[in-house]
Length: 286
Ligand code: NDP
Image (cartoon, rainbow, N blue to C red; front, side):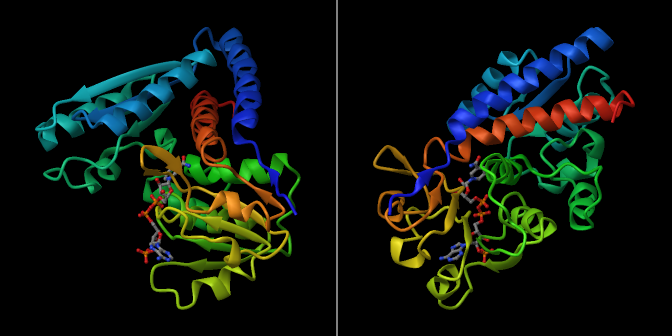
């Protein structure tokens, strides 16, 4: 068996065009375009690379992008004052803060100040709680939303399926598990203390990995014909590899997201969609 590739890159391109059309309609109606503000403290190269990708995606779809940088030694007051200002800026519909913050700034500063209505990456406890309760007006984090969108666009049904989520972080594993549960999958969540991980993963109709360990999911851990969604982004010998041993898994799985070109490109378009939704909510359209 050779698995069908779930082509996140192509899908992201299509969705980006759809969003660009919606942005144009929004502009026609309101005379301005929805926009995101990205806050970056310090100059971590990986973070700067990601910020450039966000800028590229947003501007390509005709959306506003603003970068606000603070020096690595910025104090809590400077940071929270910037966030508060962005909260009140009507041209800023969504805000994301590049994490992790420098060690001297506790991460709760972000959620203490960030307006949940502008929290387009779904990190605020109010949005996490609304996601938990399956309330429609939440913002789910962009990465798991991207994984779900791949499943939807490839018409992969979740109802009644056994989904096994490996990883339980607040930004990927846990929300992905909830989103799959909300679509009536039977969900098992695995983590670093799970005994016999392979025994769990082998039961999966839909296997999702968000661990951050290169090729931790081997072909032997995959049930023949399973759908495999790989969120892992790991750099090994200068090359990007996922949490799944993709090449070997291709011979067993039914569908698989490649790395790169799978879930990665979907994250930015989901961030764009959340920002568009935020702008609509803020203007009473949604
Ligand atoms: P975290 O480090 O926050 O979480 C990793 C999770 O994996 C934890 O729940 C941890 O368990 C679990 N884990 C660690 N080791 C094992 C193991 N041996 N067996 C089973 N579970 C294990 O990572 P993130 O969720 O932030 O990211 C996961 C991956 O996704 C990374 O590669 C990251 O780069 C990537 N990522 C990709 C994005 C994209 O756009 N595609 C966006 C964000 C992240 P425990 O809770 O017990 O510690």
